[in-house]
Length: 250
Image (cartoon, rainbow, N blue to C red):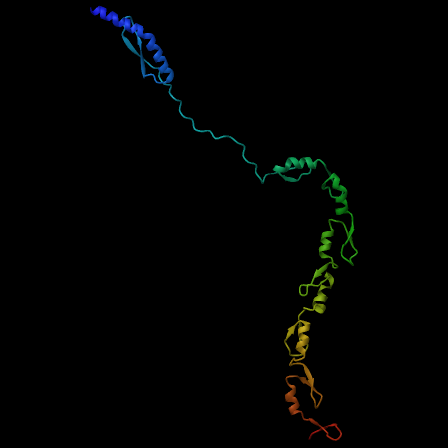
């Protein structure tokens, strides 16, 4: 009887194998299979667990590598042009070299000048030109003209007081004798008032140091001393009522 029951159990297990195998395949594909599945070993129908393959060990994490990039150009860097020898910003050296190949040396100063501008350069820098100031009449090359113009005696310069424009050579005379805003002193001896010519002209009419003739002796005295002099004048005169002449009063 026991053997018959065992044979029946084996038969049922063998019949269910295809169905269980298909179910397990679906679970494995769906990722829902259990941690270990079973297989039939031997003819007695006993089952033994078959371990799953060991999970791969992850490699140690590597530190992030910063992306490599070229350093930014130095804005202060300069390079020497092999054609003209000029120090040029490194960022512009390529364009400078292209333009420099089109230059020509000036026959007067050896400066490298664009070929199209060479004639204008010679005319402006090395051909004598007359001074632009009226009355000068001298001529200079373009490289010497700026120094001459800055010191030319015929150059117009402004007066610092009245803002009039006069030739540089005449500025001292204008400042001392002609400028309406120059400072002058009162001409009367002892007076310390100063001002512009117009102000002094008004001041003279009432200046206490202006000389005034005595009404009696015709001597001249400062205006502030005249009243006292006339009161004490020894030759004081009076008008004669008959002849209208002035006579000395004893």
